[in-house]
Length: 229
Image (cartoon, rainbow, N blue to C red; front, side, top):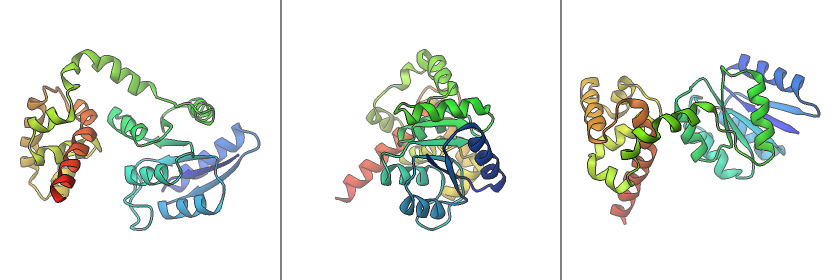
């Protein structure tokens, strides 16, 4: 079995490679420190499994902008390739988005190696590995978030286009400071928008906002596309 590890931290690649070689039999492991190198390996060598870090910096090449964009690129280009996302993030919004764009599993870097092996076994068998963090968030938030299950149309009616943009960036885990930098706004302006978003959607915190962010942004982009036609 050929496994590809993609992570921009060399010590993570070395440690994870050693873990896989020690815990699995009949395995070949390749490593890549950026998206371009990973795509080159995928193009030239048959790969059975990819373990990809979530927040890699963009390299400006075929790997896109890193992060979700790179994972989406791999999922779209190699739809039959099982992908496990490995990340320090335990944000349910990040986990959910990775699974939504096609990853078969998500493992946090703080998890014991047994969890990783469990995830590998499940995705290679054609199943998905959903971490307990997401299941807990869904269980705890199911009743409290019932008002959030509105359609994308309803959400879009409640928010301005600027607020939808900010909501999408919240779903990526960006802080107010980074959102301000991304949208060329003051940090105070972003804080005002975030508060307005939470009030409009009857949310308690940013984590809940992140769970609906991808849907809202997709809806916004669809309307922009229709307007351009």
